[in-house]
Amino acid sequence: DIQMTQSPSSVSASVGDRVTITCRASQSISNYLNWYQQKPGKAPKSLIYAASTLQDGVPSRFSGGASGTDFTLTISSLQPEDFATYYCQQSYSPPHTFGQGTRVEIK
Amino acid sequence: EVQLVQSGAEVKKPGESLKISCNSSGYSFTNYWIAWVRQMPGKGLEWMGIVHPGDSDTRYSPSFQGQVTISADKSISAAYLHWTSLKASDTAIYYCARFYGGNTDYWGQGTLVTVSS
Image (cartoon, rainbow over all chains, first blue to last red; front, top):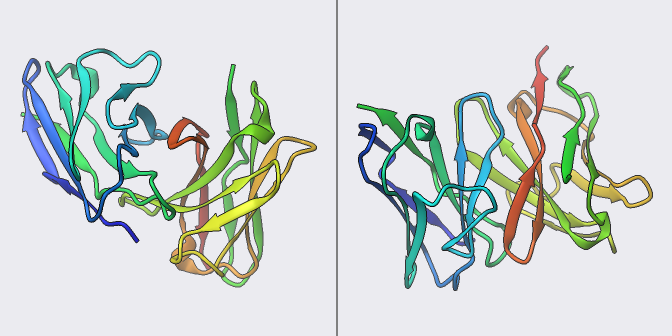
């Protein structure tokens, strides 16, 4: 199985801050990397697929990057509605493993 | 409008069987895979497997192979997750989601399964 290592596990930030979350794959996954946002008691919401393509309706303050087996999710200016848990997932080969999640908390 | 609507919460005893459903609408059901994802209380997301309703091709995570059965009925645009003998450790929220070409875009609302004696 491909292992996805996500960091940090949590981050405290203020509204307006720039936040970056990293996800590292244990082997090459090309650009088959997705990012999701989950708020308490809610289903995950798809944010980004193919490492850097925003899903329809996702604000442009979210962006995804890739370098080899390292991937990033950046929120350029944190908004109140962005406080949530974020997960990466590889969809290169089954099982499509998730990272452990990053909780973005209010500072 | 694409929608994935899951069946309601279930409370079961250990050893009982259960089948939960994910009903799809608003798109061509046979052109997309359906994935199932588990979230145990207070924990992260775990990918269980996927089914292609067009030909019933199914792939499982090794962690869930033999523990559950994933299926689909294209005549009614529904996917299923089935247990023959539940355990307390199956207590979790289960999500279905639409998958195609590496992209998981739409998710169901989740089904809470509680297994307790």
